[in-house]
Amino acid sequence: MHVLVVNFQLDGLPRDQYEQVCNELAPTFAAIPGLVSKHWLANDETGTYGGVYVFESHQAFLDYQASELFASVAGNPAFADISAKDFGILAGPSAVTGVS
Image 1 (cartoon, rainbow, N blue to C red):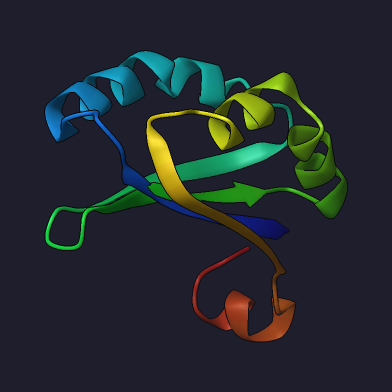
Image 2: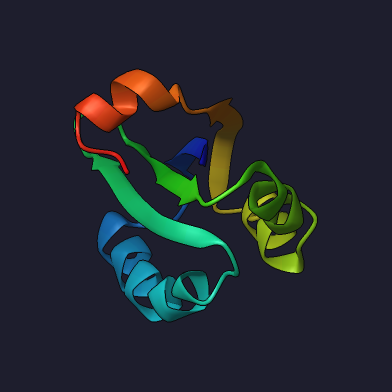
């Protein structure tokens, strides 16, 4: 498995409109090959939003990273201070805590 964590601030897009767009785009993300899950993040206190993507493999992550969808998220003018960091998974302790 491989994980991508994306965080950003909204710039000129109210939270309720952002959430509406997220609801509309969820099926698009669900169709990403090799994506196990995407957890949509929101912290209204800090104004930080984003997602945690879990991929079945590092290659699935690389394929997403090379996609137009990834580029559209990274280049969205409504997202400020965007960061995207990927991580491998420690299989042993993750299996103990419920990741198969």
